[in-house]
Each structure stands twice: as C-alpha cells, then as structure tokens.
Image (cartoon, rainbow, N blue to C red; front, side):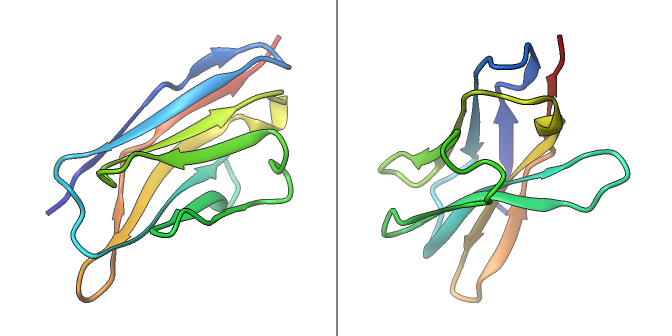
Length: 117
C-alpha cells in the first residue's frame, strides 16, 4: 500500500506563506490525480486543490489566486504553495492520491496549519 506523508505545516501570521509537501512511499501506479484537502475543527473536510496526471489544476474558490498546487515528474510528490494566508485557512491539511487499476484513494495523516497573529 502507498503511504503519503505530509510536511511543511506550522504557525504563520496572516498574510504569510507556507509550502506543504506530500511524499509517497513509492511511485504511484496508474496515477489519476493528487490533491489537498483540509478540515477545521467542527467542520467538514473540504477540497482545497487538485492536480491531474495531465497537470490540469482545480482550486476551491476560497483559495483561488492564493494557493498553487504542483507535482514532480515522478508523480510521487505533490506541493501546495500557500500565499496570503488568512485565519480562516487554519485547518489540518491532508494529502490525497487517486491511483490504481481500480482507482482508490490514499490519504496522508495530515499536517496542521495555523494562521494567527
């Protein structure tokens, strides 16, 4: 089974930046897409950004223009560059990968992002 490990979370002031990384334990077979989700306390998990095998991207309206998702050529690492961070961006951010002959979801353990003065 592929394991995803997130890193790069932390505490940042409003208007600051963070870059999250998600590394897969092995190269993904039949890669479809990878993405970032986030969940704040008491709220549902929401999609933040996705990137496909063809490098097309999609963003939630709340982060569009501020966040950028990218991946490496080996399709085993995905990044989320977060700029102009707001307090409402505070959440646990989870990495997701969709891969396999029968497409399945892989999830990381999450990394905490806190935006506060």
